[in-house]
Length: 355
Image: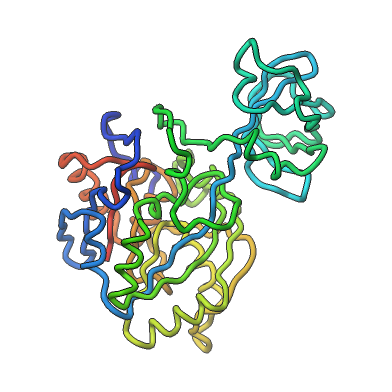
């Protein structure tokens, strides 16, 4: 198995720049794993594809407005992208700017005004951050003078992926309608297609809904650079599968329903919890903590029976995960067909239902 086995060519015109409106009007490619057959549908048709007693698992994480603009003491412009919180004041962050060594301070600005020459003076709020450790590459450990969260409404910007060039008029369109737990650096994008009306329709049909939380890190989307994907170091993310969700999973399995994971983040949470089970105790149990599970072809799924997912970047850990679920050849054939049929790819793109 080589990383190049998961490569494909995507025309830039296939990368979605804006979300579908309404959310559930996006297209849905249905892939039947056993036969390899494909159907072309609309996302709201998911209510026709799920059955009573199926269990839909949603990731309720919420994206942090983690893109923050600041200035150095000398007036130089700095951009911070908060990745992970270590404690009330300390964050792992990507920094854009020169000379950001240990001990340097940056002063937070009110919005993106630090990019404008007429922007406010440093120390608008008296809120500053100090570089306390150099991590890998442009990552730094920074410590704020006080908790940053109360300032998010005034200083935070939603960090869209670099392949999206259009300005997002409504930041809520990069949040799922069921998001609750603030903590992600990026959205669990398969969940962006759901509307409250579609969720109500699914419940009325008898489909059960349960929640997990996995706070998405930017490293999740990074391409694998090693020739052998098994040598790739996947970064750790925090996740939670509560007891009530574990109970719902076990009840669905016992009633003959399917566990349908929405997004690779939900898949990774479910399968992380499953690693704690044994043949003597096959029931899913609650799980809380870090996970660095890396799912490659050959992996035997223990919980997930079907999944809703978007179209992923070439050579990413995510396309490897869906290839493990459906087969690499079938996934690449479906992707090439999707390109031919004009599907939209990546975060604001269309979706797949793999069963």
